[in-house]
Length: 345
Image: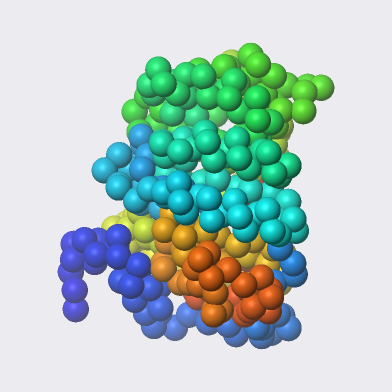
């Protein structure tokens, strides 16, 4: 049997992560839960969101990051791959939103060109900005203005409304830089009352537990950020941590893996399962491969389709496909549900 150190060493490899989450812990299979809910096989309900990971390079190394992003990552989407994405979007107006992720997507050298091109296609553009990138380097200081010019919806992670809990999860100094970035976004209208510039925050639990009620937690965040820092935002999204990559590393190292998985399984919610984001989303990897969701992308679980790469994009086949599932899918279907847009029930 491998030592814990050996397990952790291999956790960046998708095949090994799958080996861990598929290991027999006498867990109820996700497939069985779907069958009992009359949802198996899980199918799409129509395209809406085209989610694109433009690279794994990031200025931060967050403990909960399921992408395993960081400054040393070299995976970056090329302009040619971006152009293929643009061609698909031009041919498929059913994709009404384009969700750009990373890493820090802004660190892709073609990021601004890509956003401008998508905007010209009259699609809603969502950028998952980690906030600190705005103040990390002078070349990013004008991002708020760029976002405004292109009517970008900004979605940003903020683990908590206090310094200690935020820095513990995302690194020293992150909270102060995040507050500064939020103030800069507020200054030009993001998140402010009577403004159409959307600023949404994301909360991930710091430990091995499910998120609290999204509505109540949003109220806490709004009151604290407004009272302590005069900061406004639109919505708070609560997202369940997925048992993959760095969070899987944490679960194994802390001895919480089995109990956390059992918590997810016992909290399975068929209503949440019916509303999972993979049913109206396609996830595109930095190299152009197609996945059912961002989490499957990190486990290298490509779509069950003849069209596994954007170079051979076939909308009919992708519409008819069965969604690829595994035990980690309990993370999106437990409790109030979880998606890139927060709880689903």
